[in-house]
Length: 389
Image (cartoon, rainbow, N blue to C red):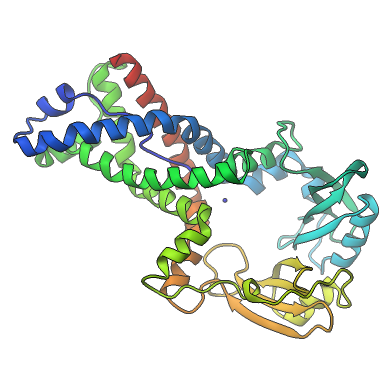
């Protein structure tokens, strides 16, 4: 889940950065003005997308916790630690929402959690729309449902709306591709901003400090520069992972020029559409063995993708995929997201690092702080630009 960003704002002029730091030499003056212009204009343009993505990224760092708090009647049930009634939940969902087709089932892993289902349904007799349902794991009864990918800030839809805004600002795949391009520029801007932040390397400690009268230009500049430097490693990781998560295929194709990179097995399965499976979800989970985290229903390929918890997992999601045929229950394959080589391992870590979950609670808090800091950098940078005008 998060694309928090950084360094979306300009730095001060040559008077404040060049002369005050005592930098010398014609070579320094040749690159610094150009670097400042690039950083300035990237920052001014980036505010349009960086600020909302930073704020929404911070919020969805704790998506499940906040959604449970907002919708306890949907997300939680009385204590239950037995097997979940997955098949009954699918039947109840189809009765509750005619035409419902499940794509994903999140199996409760904590006593008191509800079953979560994602799929499509024909609401009002129209075209199929994306929906999310929650069911009681004891008997499969529907606790509630919502249409997803809609702009609504009531308590039922708030977290889903924030998540959708964070993905592509709810403007579609073209904008998502543009955001990938911005992520690439953002990585480059990290290098530029870091170079500009140390005009005199011998005085590098001063770049991490904030001095001057409050709200003066020097204070604003120091706050902007120091804030960015303190969490620079975190935001650089977020920049890189933003690029790989948005430009999924392009970054993997680029990596394959240097190292082998494989994909999940179902990316290469032949099409074998199954509309009414002979094997139920509960049977598939039992056949897969182990503790199941979730199930992906790949009707087009005729298999269930059962995700199991494994000691190699990088976060709190099951990363071992076991594929079970919807027709006869045979095993179509198994693969852990870590794959076999360094390329697979690199891409397997992208979401755990982007969400912070790969480092536990500490990682999530760092991502939260990085998102809030990024919003602050955008505002201080914009303020600096305006004051200097």
